[in-house]
Length: 209
Image 1 (cartoon, rainbow, N blue to C red):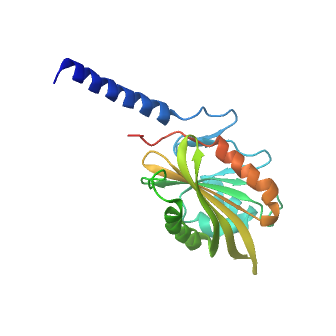
Image 2: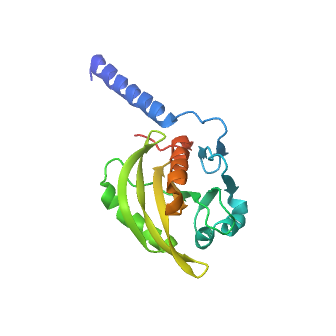
Image 3: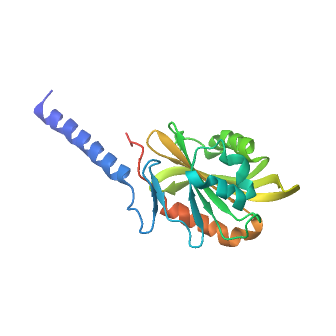
């Protein structure tokens, strides 16, 4: 191999390494963020929302009955509870840290990716009607967003719940951010969830190469 060829290969490797460092660094953590070092993420809770870490999940079940069935067996790291009366179904955001690599979100069809996730949603929450599945960007990473309506029961009555779930890749893990809320509160609470996504930082990021 000539010296010139060696230099070109070395330059290419250094360029790839530099790109990997830049892309894996992510954005700066915003002021006022809740930081979970063990889970490898941070976010800014919306103003007026309560942040409950894992050891306080029993309180979350009392505040929002829709959470009760899912808290025991989901790998939840954080629950955010929106404004509302205790027992009246205040909106919530769940953050789960799931071990294992996420699917290739940038390469695969969102509709195909959505189907197995829908099955897990129905297993966890109940009947689910999806109205959208799309790719989106979260902290510079390709993520998948699903949105639809749940049919669920609580307190002996049936009602509908807006569900938005976003799958974000991390280093040997992925993050599931799930919004649950009454359709009547969408105009105020869905923008609050979108603000959470804008503030979300992946502190243990997947390798680009």
